[in-house]
Image 1: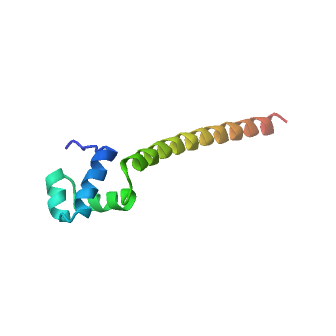
Image 2: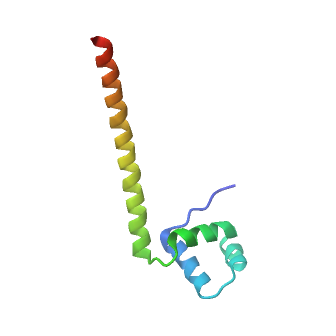
Image 3: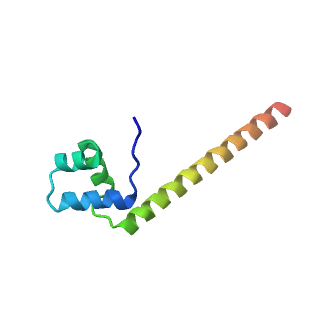
Amino acid sequence: MKRARFTEEQIIGVLKEHEAGAKSADLARKHGISEATLYNWKAKYGGMDVSEAKRLKALEDENAKLKKLLAESMLDAAALRELLSKKW
């Protein structure tokens, strides 16, 4: 089964429909998502505008990149310490 990816604009649009009074079950059926997904989106993107959601996504991507760089540098440092301790 192919997993559908929704853009921030689409997610915010679905949440706006929910805030306007549409029922969760109807929205989930209409957009092909589960109610749990709808509530997860509401927890993450609730009350946001599209620009704020895009900024959040950019920050999450940058954070993941920085975490990866930090892990690689720590691994390199540990390998160098290991090498130097064996040499002496």
